[in-house]
Image 1: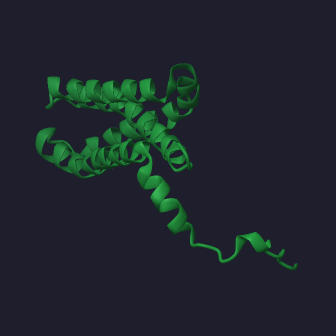
Image 2: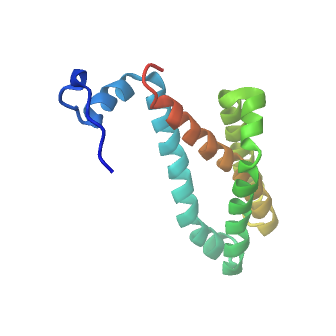
Length: 150
């Protein structure tokens, strides 16, 4: 199949990075989304590496690794099914605030009794719902922030 001809007015094509980068860097939401992802990914990577230490040294039960991992993963999956409806009802900003509150409550539940496996699982479940919504909203905001003129 033959490629269509470029219109004369286009001239030389500029690389997309030279067009997009200045527009993205001028966008005030770009820095917010970047900070959101840095924070969310730091929490996610910290959780993955600290769970081994937490189960081995705090709970003294390495068999808790699987339940704790599932307690974080399942709420993320389930919660992401409801994030679009929540965002439609209350907006991105309030959804992110609610998600942050859920994550904080989850951490506080674990802090009540850090040596209890039950508290750890309940707190991680609550934190999982907040974590999923933060990532879902973050990716949606990243798409919005990359639009020119926003």
